[in-house]
Length: 353
Image (tube, rainbow, N blue to C red; front, side):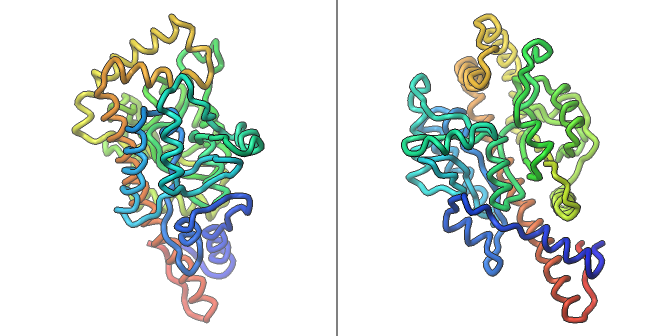
């Protein structure tokens, strides 16, 4: 329940954050962030375009993700770094440019940009492309005032991290940046139990939409691991709202299982994942940092082409779920604003239900 006076005013301030002036917002995103035309927003990453999928398949998926968000009543905000600008919301030409980076991955000069890379990529100026990772997208989404972000899978603890110390920056970002990330769990090439342990250490709330309470394992709906919370769209939106009202500086993970029709081949794909991981170790690729994940995804697509369709299905499903929750969150935020207005006029403030 939201109570009058100070609590309501604090809640309203948490709802409204002005975007950082250094960002370049598309007209659609700017309008969605404007009080008089406020519309729910969903951030989308760009590494899936520059490094995750081959051209032109990557462009098809990028467009489908944006349309999926629109179909649910929200505004998509694909985030990328182009020519010294941090862009929040892209036009069709900018999407095409990102996608063409993947025409030949051996000559791909796009930079995978996490938090550590953003300033460097922007400082390089013209003719520079940065595809934002989960970490990089979270940073820029938060700077823009966007609370919800959809992706395929988060980074995590790599297998063998006890000797390589290869742990994704996505995890530390989730511990310090209050953006809700909708995903299908960590990428299947990772050590999921250890990833969950690190998320717990960083104080990151993890919720699954799986009614069994099981955490999804990217290509399959069940990892055999349970997480503390299972919820629905309304509960997710309330959690995001309260996280903002409390001023907690940590993100949230909302794990959405892969659609049922693709879950059936998940076990087959996972067998090929294990093969790809073994090959990466044998060839020494597992020690190449940011190169590891793109190599594994490419090799997986070679070993079992169906993995591309599964990847597409799960990320589109996550965008749909994120947009649905964004619409519900927008409804709740507007209730908070109306409650503040009612109290200011001497009425009795309502509660958010």
